[in-house]
Length: 116
Length: 145
Image 1 (cartoon, chains in turn purple, yellow):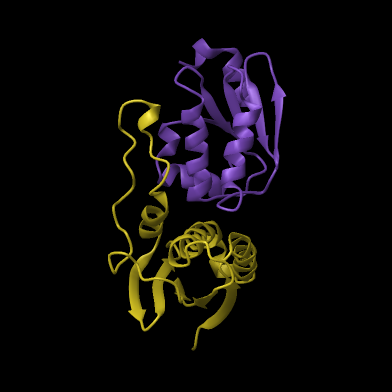
Image 2 (tube, one colour):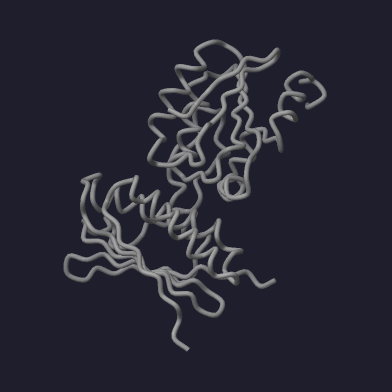
């Protein structure tokens, strides 16, 4: 499954290593994301390789966000144009903090008060 | 002048949807005036074709789906046919975009976005049932620049 994880000082980063987060991998994404993130760190989902997100993929992101519990944050980083379009249309951009790059998301995680 | 038509046939599996969308992307990229709607067409057709796999054919593999793209002056006209079960209400669901303003993350919707996006991004959406055949037709407009 195309998910990898890396630990940083203030957040765990989950990288989607696939060009599409769609109906064909949504169930696997949910399982693997949960297995990778069974700690208590905040999570940044690195979407920079994802060219296409459909409603099943979006639903799987919402599902894992809910499953993380109420006290862990999840941010999205590196959205390509078609992915950003889906986030805007569904207004999910009002639910998740979205950063242009992973570096921006990591900076914000290191300085949480500046982001508020 | 007659529009250029591109016909895609696939069977009812999510992997087939994925490869068909790649073919659609190629067709649109090869038609410069339509490049602007490449992303939107991927989003719409992904939802439409996955709905057929999941709902019309109930995840049963191997059933036929036909997709016809007609490149016209200011629109991409789309016709999609399948031989699965009819739409439950006799028409495509149109409940609007799921609300996000409930309290707390537990209330966030995980579905209902597909048809809402199709309605938001297309014009002239029509559905008919002819014998054992579902026909969905709509247009994707090229934004005036």
